[in-house]
Image (cartoon, rainbow over all chains, first blue to last red; front, side, top):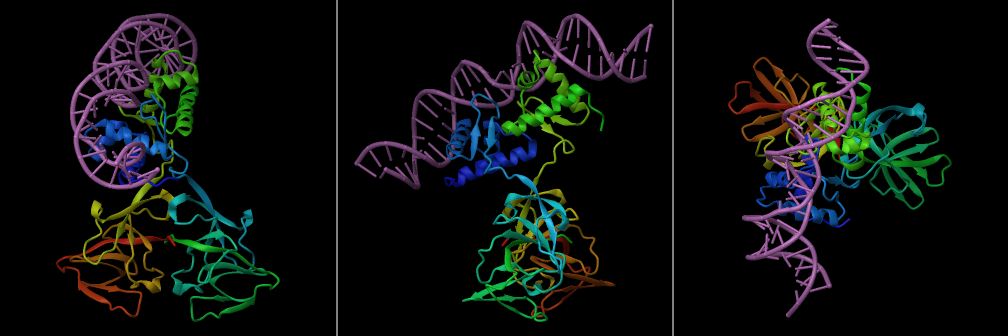
Length: 202
Length: 202
DNA sequence: AATTTTACTGAATATATATACAGTATAAAT
DNA sequence: ATTTATACTGTATATATATTCAGTAAAATT
């Protein structure tokens, strides 16, 4: 999608805020009032620019006929929370789902698939504490230094990822825990995904 | 909340559907078209009934000025993110607001007023890292062990709170930092609020 | 039995609103 | 170098829209 100018961003923010506040979109005059414009045509032309760039649609002739595009409006959804149990993989199967919590798409910088409820303190020095919810993006494409969800047979752990050649090192962020060395081809070894965010509910 | 008649339910559903479809509320004429009424006053009086029963609010004089009540539509809101700068208190003044992020009411167990962007590692051992967003509830009622936002003159810090008698101890969660001892009556000392949650965006 | 609420039609109207037109000026793209 | 996009002010206007008033009629409430 085409980039917006600073003023266009302001107008778009203004529309979002107005809808949140009132429940319906602003008129040209409302936008002028909010942003200090003195002519309704200032708002009009910004709206047409936003329309042209695909951020909104405008129903011609309708009052307040502004509609935020799907990309523009943050949709609220629910996302599952999965318990990190010693035996049992974090799948999206019903029996593993602790609960669903609401979230906004743009909460984190990257999108993600589920929350993992952390047990234990093996990633303490990375600021990941017991009962934290780690946002996990399901992917096997991980890079050195990523915090990953690794499965070894039925055991699931959250660790730093470090690979060199054929060997993978899973490094805890806590001196009380040991590093795990494993070969890429090991039967039952699998990278479930990586951490892209965290929520602490206390 | 007072019960709705079948027709009133139809009108309410019509409004919800129209908003979902178009992004903005219907006019009286729109409702008539959708439900087959021949007079705009049919819609008008239904709207006033819905308003009277608390399902919607109507902004008088505004076109499409229909707003679904909180009970009627669960709205998502935005909450400000405030930078924790060495000099300058975390107020909700515009100049301190980094950005707004969307959130759902039930994201954390407690409600809160703003997010504080963490600078430095003074609370590292509590799992609070640089650039984390700490959810702050504005209150001066804090208990020993709470993580609080304390202001001393223009300096704002995030620390564990510990009080005994008239003396307050502000304890970092990092051995590299020193504890702060202060009297309750100290001029310029103030508890801004306490941490009730955390978000890490990486 | 009397009153209020619901559920409309139909007509009228003040005003809220989108939108076009005429300008000015600067920045960006071709 | 010329065109296009950005970023407005200011005026004007057709029409989209809320809203009031006058009725009719059945159902629910008091």
